Amino acid sequence: MAEKKTLRNAKGEGSFKVNADGTVTHRKSVGFKANGRRKVITVTAKNKSACIREMKKKENEWNNIKNGLHIDSTDTVVSLCYRHLEYQVLNNDLKGKSIDRRECTIENQISGYDLGYLQAQQVTPIDIETHVKLLISENKVGASSIGKVVDVLNAAYEWAIRQGDMQQNPVRLVKTELSKKLKKLSVKGADEADVVALSDEEIKLFEREATELHANGHEKYPAGMYCLLLLHTGMRVGEMIALRWRDWKGDYLVIEKSVSTAKNRNKKSEDENNYISLEDNKLVTIMQFTELEGGTKKFLTEFMSALLWQSVKDGGNSADLHSVDYILYDEFQNVALGKGSTLDAMLREGRKCGLGVWLATQILSNYKPEQIDTLQQVDTMLLFHPSERSMKGIAQLIDCEAWESCRSALSDLQKGQAILKGKYSVNHNSKIWDIPIICAVDSKSSN
View 1 (cartoon, rainbow, N blue to C red):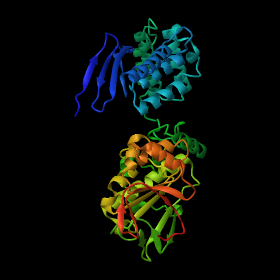
View 2 (cartoon, rainbow, N blue to C red):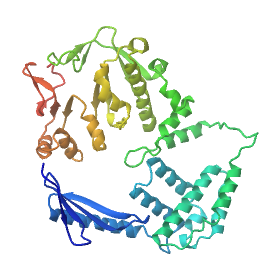
View 3 (cartoon, rainbow, N blue to C red):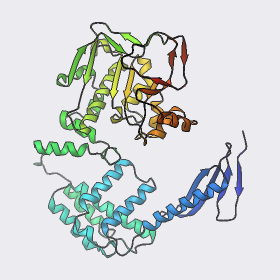
View 4 (cartoon, one colour):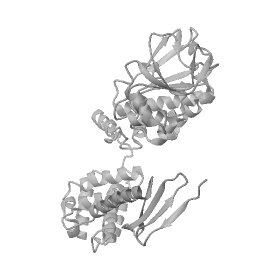
C-alpha cells in the first residue's frame, strides 16, 4: 500500500495529504464557531489544484452562513430564535425530535405574539414576564410547554451574547422566578381529570397532524405513527411489541383468493424453472389501503408487516396463519427501509426463515446511501427505463464504478426492455450468470 504523505504549506494555508489511492485531502482552519471551537473544513479531490478550488467554495459557503447568522438591530425575537436553531442544526447539536419540538415552540408560542415582533435587542425582562403570563392566561398549553418557551428564548439570547451580537440576556434575570411559578401550575389538583375525550372532528385533526410530512417526504413527527396506535387502540408501544399475527382480526381489510400457480423464485434449486406450484389450500392475502390517508396507510403497512414478520420468525405459521412463502410490496418506497425497520430485517434475514420478498417501485431517488446498501441484499433486480432524475442513482446501483456506461444503457432501453442484475439462469437453466444484461420482459411468456 502506498504511504500517505502530508505536505506542509505556509501558515494559514492548511495541509495537503496524499492518500493511498492517489487522491489529495486538504484540511484548513477557517476561524472559530460561536461556541469557541475551531472550524475546520476538509475536502478531497483528484489533485492539489482541485482541492484548492473546492476549498474556496467551501470557505465562501461558511462565510455566507457565518455572516447570515449574526443578529443586527432589525432582527426580531422570532428571527433570533430561528437563527439560533439554524446554527444548532448546521453544527449537528440537535437530534431530529429536538428540532421538531423547537420549531413547534417557536411557531406556536412565540411567532404571532407581541413578543415575537419586538426587536430582539430591545426586549426587557418585563416583556418576557408579560409573554409568559399571557400564555398562562390563554390556557392553550401546559406549564411544561411554557417552560420550553422560556428555555428557547434563554438559549437564543445566550448564543447571541457568545457571538458578540448582544450585551445582555433579558431572560436570565427572571428565569428562576418563572420556573418556580410554572412548577406550581404543573401540580394537579385532586379533582382534575387525567383523561381527555376527543370529538370526531378533533380525532381527524389529530390524525392529520400526526401523519404530517415535510417537503422531502420525511415524517414531521418521528413518533406520529405511535400516536395513531395509541389513539385507535389504546395500546402503548411496549404492548404492540407483544402482539402476534393471530391477534389481528381486521377481516374487513383483507381479501383472500385461492390460486393455482404463482411466479417467483424456487427456494429448492436455482436450476429449476422460476415457477412454483401452490396447493389448493394455499391462499394469497391482499391488503389494500388505497382509501386511507398517506400517513395512516404507511403506518398500517409497517404495523401489519411487523406482525407478520414476528410470526414468521417465531416459526408459528401453522398456528398463527397459513404458511407464508412470499410477500410482495407494491410501491415500496412508502415503506420504511432504515436500519432496524421491518423491511430491512426481512431483506437481511428472510432467507433464513424461508421467506421470499418481492419489491416493486418507480422511485429510488429518495433513498439514502445506507438504505440503497440494504436494497443490495436482494437476489435479483429488474431495472426498467428510469426518470432522468433517478438515472444516475440507478446506474450506480448497477455498477458503482462503471456507472456512466450503465447510464447510457439505461437511457437507451425501449418499452418492454430492462436490465437484469443479480443471479439468473440462461440457455434453459444450463448456466448461472451474475453479470448485468439487457433482456426483454414479456408478461405473456412462460419462460
